[in-house]
Image 1 (cartoon, one colour):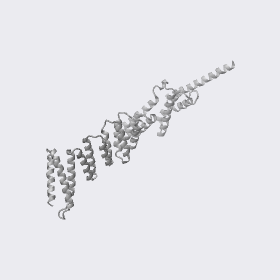
Image 2: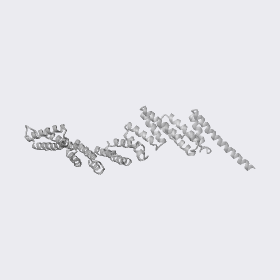
Image 3: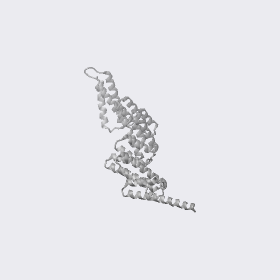
Image 4: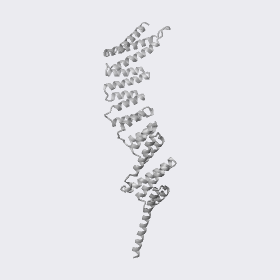
Length: 364
């Protein structure tokens, strides 16, 4: 009989302790609702550390809400982030304990993320970019692998011309989160534009272009981007190899070869320019753009040589021969072009001008 009485007594004491801890949680919630956050935290932590209520989803949820408020009230960024991490941990623990609890029907982490993401957008719209960055970094703490957060962070970094953070954020989206959303095309373009201007990023930029080609195999745009990257970095051989190995139309092959030739002209390397023009002409011997390019390049060299011939102090015969050669080559291409472009009066005038120069040089 005594043994039975003792068991009943223990049971009653246990129930009393449980009820006391549940009451403590309710008092913590009451203090929280009245804005007495320190008191609320003390009460709920006693409940959390008690064996009877350590697995109470309500207790952990309440602690998370308290830390969320304390984070907002923090006087320093480090304190804010510390409290925020404690709120995240508390909410995660509450969800792990009881995902079906009615108090968790509005996912607390979702609500927390939305609050920071909204704050970031509002701060950015007010051009308070420092606060926008902080809010997005905190949103990332809550959802470490959320694509919306990374998109917003990358966009903000790009807007502020923080190229390092832009690259880090967008590449994490692609490489680690395997982002496949409707902005992927735009992100590839943005990264390629940004990195193609840096010599140190050439290899990575080319990898990006290849990855973009795999994602969008039906788009010819990426070959253009790769070619532009190679040109920007003076990779002439690689650029020419791209022309020969890619399945390009004759028109695009000629366009690329003309761009290569133009780069050689800019670099004052006319012989290489001539080679690229000749390769383009081999594809289409009647291409007017290439014929005129060749004519005008020969003409430019002829004019420069003619200026160095000299007159009164004696004729530089080497320069004379050089000028004559290039004028005659220019005339040859102009004559070829006019046979396909007979209504071009400008070309006829240019032919007359070149013939005049040839006549003058031959009389020296």
